[in-house]
Amino acid sequence: MISALALCILFALDSAVALGPAPVNLRTAANYAILSKSGVSTVPPSVITGSIGTSPIAATGLTGFSLTVDPTGQFSTSAQVVGELFAASYSAPTPSILTVAIGDMGTAFTDATGRVSPNFSNLANGAIGGLVLTPGLYKWTSSVTVGNDVTISGAATDTWIFQVAGTLTVVAGKKMVLAGGALAGNIVWVVTGSVSVAAGAHIEGVVLGKTSISLLTGATANSRLLSQTSVALQKATVNN
Ligand SMILES: *[C@@H]1O[C@H](CO)[C@@H](O)[C@H](O)[C@H]1NC(C)=O
Image 1 (cartoon, rainbow, N blue to C red):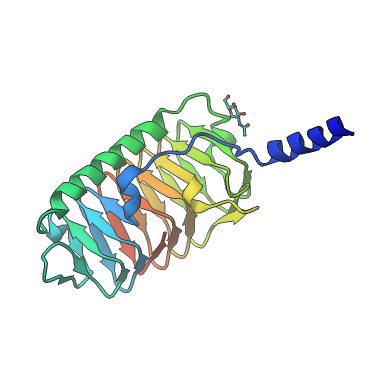
Image 2: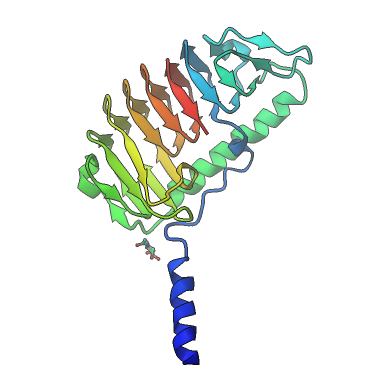
């Protein structure tokens, strides 16, 4: 009787254990919906919920936002951003805060890209449209294309790291869909090549890009776009 109860409790505990790799710590990079080193552009109207940071480039690297600089000089605002925009040319303490955040973004990239013993290697040769992606570490030595809707399925505590050595492309109108309670904040795309979310397409997860991240007309993203070069938005929506 008691042992049966103990077994039940063990099973209950076991089913609550999170699946997937240890989370990637974004540290202060997690304070931004979009973070970049060489600028963020928008073709209005985009809708960004969360703050934007760019460093070491100056505020001239924030284009298309019709910025209003705050009287403190520490940040600016834009009708396209529910949040604040920060650049390395703004008043203290903004530049030093951004330097730390950019460093944290680099550390997170190095962490995520350095994870070993993938659960899945070169799955579907990178053509992942139509698949259901369960929690785990995924590694592709080539590019990855979402040519059809792809489902990322798992519990709210589960994690995914997708290592992509080439480019990541979500084809026009195609979507990443979450299932089972999976959270965008527990999904990391660490991409060495450029990231392109084509017109009307949708991406879920934290994107750690070594190079550019582009959201074409009407594309949408849940979570964060963290680029070691630039981020380009065209009438795009970014929520974190
Ligand atoms: C993924 O691989 C790791 C290391 O080999 C293993 O411990 C873990 O159970 C695997 N996870 C899944 C969800 O298969």
